[in-house]
Image (cartoon, rainbow, N blue to C red):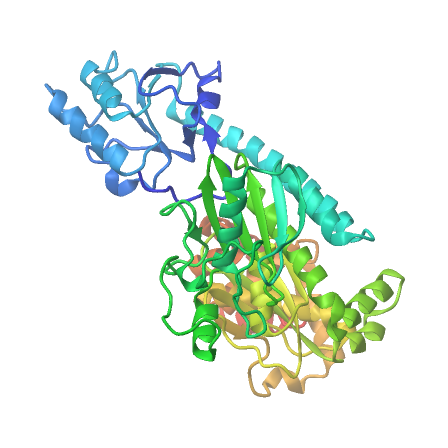
Length: 543
């Protein structure tokens, strides 16, 4: 069965949906496996639903597609296509088309191992979908609460006098397993949590070698505490076929034939190493994270079960350990630490900016391609690509402070919006510029857009004070509605495109139409008039 495309909410056990008394659902065929989970609900009356499924669905059907006199062959083909698409279960609605669930369908689901759920006449498919979303929301809330509490405890542990052991202890407790920090030579430096068996310990140490970046100063020297094979390029996980690397296309078990430690081998090996890898040994989930300091440290975890949010929690710990094992000895790290302390004690940004390495900075907003929200490790990778460790994860966007003298170029896999260079007192305005540039970049599908990349314009000839007064007066009817102002600005910047504005704002196109109509009513203006649009654009650029 193919892996389902993971939605932004945790899956729900099918048993939890069946337990809803208000739905009256009943499993009548297929395995009663508590491990069966549903990622989403989908209604289809197609005879072949395969092209319309992503995997993990509860497929709902009233049997409209079933022809008169359909026999076992029809239902066998129908169920086999659902299973091939990765469907989690089939819900069959009784009435108005069928008085009962066809017996041949029950037999086909039993034969193919697909859970078949009877949906009674009083329960609509919309009610089933709504119940599923409610259960997902509850699971998501619980996951976010768990992750937030774990982040707070990890941050507090990092501030203790013994930060590395404290972080590992908190991580092991939150995961309910074992957490280990491996050194550049592969030795176990610090561990926390229950000690697993020898098989799991050896497998976790080998998995750490899959992600460890080699360096000339850390040549591969086998030792009693170093379980690596002679060539890390040929490292084999303890369960071949189960190891998964975070970088698609990098396959464990292949490597260059040049002597280990040579410059060419080092460069090729470093480029091929994934940032994380996972495996399952003796029922224990193993994960290894390469720490971002580039010095060869690796975080390994072993947990008996995989809960929602585990990856995020481990990623936060990996970021903290990267800072604790690397930057604490560097001048730049000391400067950033000093700047943070001074800000917390009340210093103004302008006073601490020189400690960060410059007086003028650019704000960069980045959003990864696809729908997955960035985690701390992903955010740190963007910061490294831009040459800055001043990184903040704000929901689905990563914000990075980059010194003015450092060029900001496009980063594969990211959409970027870049502000103009700004002094510390203007950083909030620069943050707004970067956000708007990112919204426009996403709407126009450009990999990178910069604020203010244009020659001197006619608006630059108007005295700023008069321009600001005119803008305030023109936009006064909407001053209490920031959403309307933002929508109007985006809509005008995209030449009145409803669809691209909807993409930029992450709203439905009908919402954009309603907001623009409201703007026109409040302003008492014809927004189809180019002169009106020019006036409004002039005013919006002053806000």
